[in-house]
Image 1 (cartoon, helix red, strand yellow):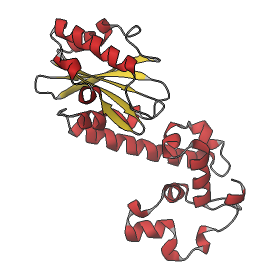
Image 2: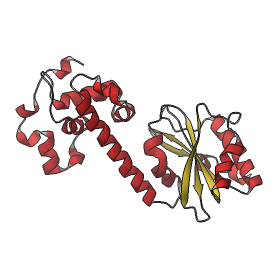
Image 3: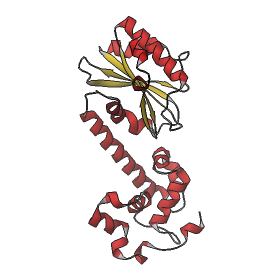
Length: 235
């Protein structure tokens, strides 16, 4: 990787090919990930352009998702970055997170698995441990709030239905949607996920607080257990 960082400087490129000028003339969407990071960094270092440092960051942390997860200190420790540039990167990531959150909050109606994904995926996909969240809905399926309840390995023996439904009862919810993440990135539900869903559906029937779906989130997408196993709800 070190060899790939020896080479061109941004000022050696034709002006029309420089990241900042391309963004101005063609829009940010035409830039690759390293070029976007280069604009945040502004300048490189001796022997490496800002684009090459961007490439190094993507390589070291495993792409944009890895940068999302990286700590401020980890970024500072990368040669050519330091506190000022690390702060710019983390600030840009936080701006993106807040924009995503605002967009999700504007879509309060939860009527499909995609609506659930819009609400939680940006944050959940970056979690390093498995977590279980519960979305509380009103009688018209509008999102009331999200409760973050469990962290760690999840299955029907470790998750207590009382904890799941307590939040819904306390906030006078009419229905719940269960959401949890797979840090591996694969959103395919496991047999344990299906068994947990079955248990919670039965508990919801007894409490008259129905579980509408159980959505699994990964960096490669989301999966609705209700879509895959509709018979769980028909039983």
